[in-house]
Amino acid sequence: MNSKHDIKILNSLVETTLDSVDGYTEAAKDAKSASLISLFNARSTERRAAVSKLQECVRSLGGEPEDDGTILASAHRAFVNLRTSLTSKDNTAVVDEVERGEDHIKAKFEDALKDKDVSSPTMAVISDVYASVLSGHDQMRDIKKTLHAAD
Image (cartoon, rainbow, N blue to C red; front, side):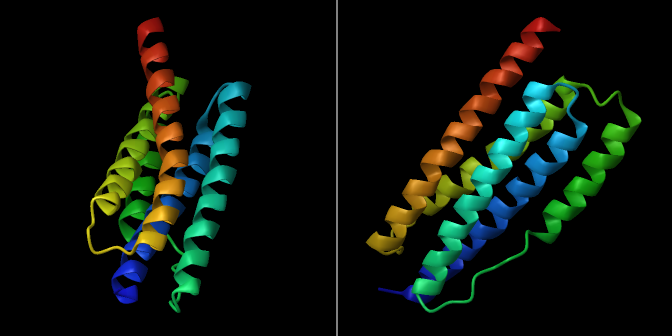
């Protein structure tokens, strides 16, 4: 078992999941409907719990868990904030951004799930968190479809 490899994979997922927390927090600020604001805040809280679970797994392997998102994400958020300030900041645009982020986090977890070098206990944690990620992804995809159908 290579705990260094597990820690590296887990910390990568921690960073991406922290990006997701930030994305949902920003989306809640930009959304124009109470139901979306509530949903985005709930997803942010859920992702924060996922981060804690991943960080705990890193600690149990003797590693130092990441506690910050990626530099790329902060640059992306700055761009998104600029773009949304130039547009109408309608719910559809906000959901489109959230759904794009959900595609990214889903892909990161799916890559980790395919990694044959990750130990079984670590894979179980990744798989558990992935169920939550997939649920969030599918929900945003469905909301996006509904909003685009209404346009």
